[in-house]
Image (cartoon, rainbow, N blue to C red; front, side, top):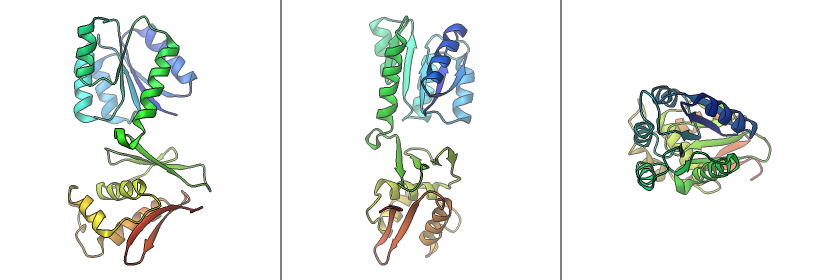
Length: 234
């Protein structure tokens, strides 16, 4: 299930969109103006956004530019009555992933939105990384840009370095990640207290193992080589 934010000032259309997308299995939150949308985007995580351009308080184009600065990988589908070529070009150049004009067909909107959501989950598009064990229905999902990860529907509490290490292990699941690979990744992260101690990596590995205890996933120590993320069935 994807978590969607619908930003639309037309109450009737907004309610209709929310009902249809919820019926399709999505979790849906709505905002009637750009200001409310920005507040929600700062406080909650969404997998995709449907954005009207003609919004009160803060325009849809301003919201789009704001999103692209802070959430560059978040899929955004513009839904608007502005059907001119210049409007489409402006919206796409500002960072929209797709553009649909009103009136529209609901089946087409759902198809376009579904395509954006599927593409955003691919590592090549900077989305999230997913890993599951055959021994559990709870899968691990790691955001590729933000220090966030989820085990099933439960968000894991991670520091910046824990997230960077987890992302590296999931990306290379089934293969050994060397200490040098981890240290190189950490060079771009903010320094955390005690992070440079000689046994720092072992401490972070231990923390992640505890947080993944019920996932069916295991971080195996390849003595003298590094660490490998494996499923319980590996």
